[in-house]
Amino acid sequence: MNQSAENYLGYALAVILTMTALAYTFWSMTGWPDHFKLVPSAATVFVEHTDIPEDVSWTGTQVVAKLYQLSEDGIPIVVNGFTYQTEEDVRLNQGLVSLNRSYSYQFEIDANGQVSQIIFKGV
Image (cartoon, rainbow, N blue to C red; front, top):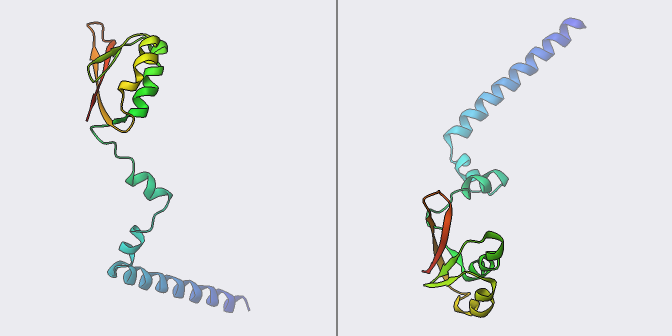
């Protein structure tokens, strides 16, 4: 009885290995793997969407939010040529920033390596 169980397990293992080899051969020679690359998953979302564009633009809403951080940062912000230096400038002139427009940004750095000014220009 012990010999027949050992023979059965050996036969089952041989069948499983043969089927696996045939399945791998069939799988690699067909276009099936290409179709599974198109199916979104958590891994593909992270892989496909981690590219950061070189020229990141800000929306008008983001620029206004940055203006409201002016008192925390203490860095003057220039938007289309107008300089915001105080909270009163922001309160009185935030209407100059178009909320529907995109803005490119640029930092000016002083001799100490600190940001001295942030410049937003409409795109």
